[in-house]
Amino acid sequence: MAVSLAVLATVFGILGNVISFFVCLSPIPTFVRIYKRKSSEGYQSIPYVIGLFSAMLWIYYAMIKGDAMILITINTFSFFVQIFYISVYLFYAPKKEKTLAVKFVLFVNVFAFGLIFILTYFLTHGHKRVQVLGYICMVFALSVFVAPLGIIRKVIKTKSAEFMPFGLSFFLTLSAVMWFFYGLLLKDMNVALPNVLGFVFGVLQMILYMIYKKPGTKVLEPPGIKLQDISEHVVDVVRLSTMVCSSQMRTLVPQDSADMEATIDIDEKIKGDIQKIKDNEEAFLVSKN
Image (tube, rainbow, N blue to C red; front, side):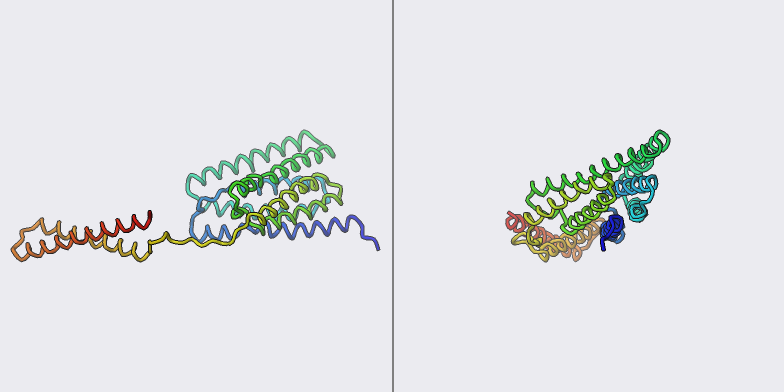
């Protein structure tokens, strides 16, 4: 019994939804880290703002085209997930990064999308509207898939794949395959064509990862330097500062001969501690060189 193209398209669409679902959730460890440290840690909001814009475009396209519930479901999920990511980022970001992120959201998700909506909804009609909107979605999707070129260049230049997680590249490639066949079977080239480029770049990233991957390295302390020595050095400095303060306080009040002798003893001890610190610093510099 032959399986119809519509059924196959639905199967690939469902698989694409499942894989894209996990891809959307992949930044969660990053935001858990941000939550625990109560800081955005220098992360940027650009990927999440662009993800929100992409979801908005594809939802609009699917609603105008009609009979595209599979596109609507995953992009609706992505829409709310990206809003959550952006909200967490704005909550924990420093004032400067927060201001830049808000401006970027207003420019991309409000102004740019609003302009696209007005131009396509009021200046085009029927099939022409679907066609124009499809071209916009396709061009934007292509530009997103080209984005990994920067990472690929960095991997080749540094000869290290530490900036390219293999798991994410694999699932993005798999997702591109599913959505390509979904668009191909429905004869929707606006969906199919961008995912050809996504597949090519995904495979290229995995190949580069296999070529340049290196065993995990452990950060070691420089030879001759131990944390215990450094901590003892810090303790000596703290103790010295306490003695200096004590000595200075004694000079503010009259002292008898016993006090003077005690002060001399303290001064001698301070000199000894200063010499000890100098010796430790010289040893530290020698071991460092």
